[in-house]
Image (cartoon, rainbow, N blue to C red; front, side, top):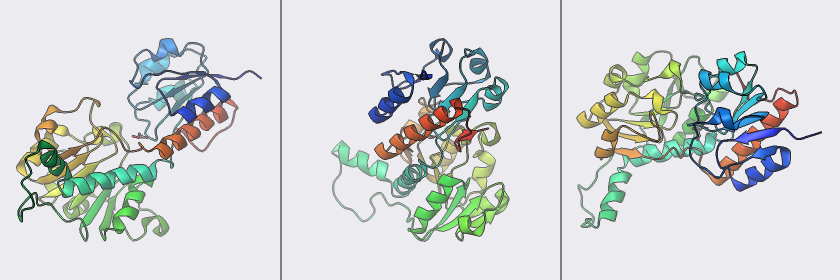
Length: 318
Ligand code: DGY
């Protein structure tokens, strides 16, 4: 049987490209940058393997060649794909759940600690050559251990963060649409409304999916309900945050510090973040470990192959 044609929008880890070439007639690329001509380049392909940053909105999906039966994304988040439009075209979608939860939670913890302990400022000070030595009042941060952590979005990644944060003796609270069963909750305290949730969040970690349902969830009104001096971390999607409101709160001190891995309109970000000392900025590194990216590649390739073979893999979405 002839191998299906797979169009890949971005350079992948070497072992994953090798596997793609083994399982598919793979159209690979050496580019790391999101592309805008997906429709033309997908001509004759049975499947498209895309990434966050590639825009697969309704117009793009409607214009895809009829040969395309599957869109796989090299990510757990699929807010860059209009799944309803894909369904209307009979195109199935799959992603990379589970395998990146630990790596992404590690990244959220990295941001949480770095923001609380002013690691960005400290590193800039050392690199500047201006550090004069230890001082009792230098770069004093906020202790993490023993504080309350609120997690907005207690899915797989949120639960991993909770597990890691328990190691720092943090008290875990969460806000989600429904309460988890006790074996997943592991003692975390559920909140079914913002008014009980936000005021306890000495630390707030955003872990909900992106998309219209959560757009600018953290805006002026919710920020005002946080305790003064809260620390905010976002390793989920930039769209969860109203940048102007967060920047104003970082300036006023209502939010003491933030750690951001994701941005509205990334790779561009609101220029005012670059002027603030009390925000730690990472370039969407959440899942960026060698073992995680390999696992993501394996699961998305197997999902695409399974769908093309008429199966329904566990990583099919929608
Ligand atoms: C995802 O998988 O959605 C991440 O944001 C990529 O690291």
